[in-house]
Amino acid sequence: MDPKAIAKTISEASRKELTLLYYLPDELERAINEKRAVILEEEGRLIGGCFWRKVGDWLELDTLYILPEFRGRGYVRKLFSRAKDYLQINPDFRKAFLFTQVPAIRKIVAEYDFQPKRFSRLPWSVWLKIFKHRLHPLRILSYFKYFRELRRLGTWQLFTFERE
Image 1 (cartoon, rainbow, N blue to C red):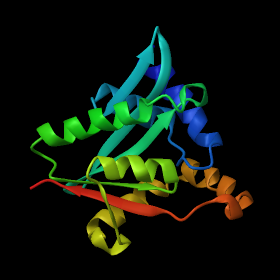
Image 2 (tube, rainbow, N blue to C red; image 1 turned 90 degrees about the vertical axis):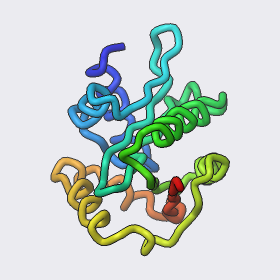
Image 3 (spheres, rainbow, N blue to C red; image 1 turned 45 degrees about the vertical axis):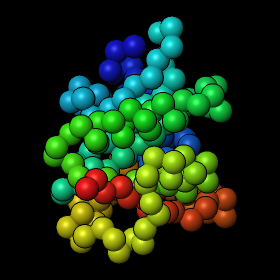
Image 4 (cartoon, one colour; image 1 turned 180 degrees about the vertical axis):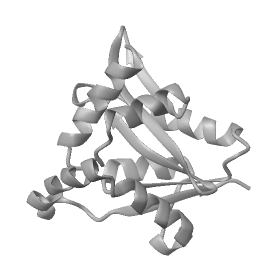
């Protein structure tokens, strides 16, 4: 699949799925083109992707998504392993973080040495960049999906990884 088609598929999924922050197609396409993504495909079919971005001197794992028909087959571990490999070999990043509310993802990220931390672990400069990113006008509209389903949401958890 070409980057534009991948970006459109995952963007549409992020608009509908409760546990995902909405991502604009051009954001995802840019991440793919800039090699800030791992994409899994099988026989030309998209399975999922993992996207990241630089936030200060941290790397944020933004989106980790597997299409519903491929879930439960170990693909999240493959994505996470490849993202962690990128982090290990890239000298620009010594620290990484992600937010999740999905219990299965919490378990998997712990297997890759990401540790649960208090939100105060991230510096204010990083929080400001996160808020700026999250407050994009088109993204704000997608937050209304959370208000309808507030009772179903779990608690958000911060996980960090720091390389020595």
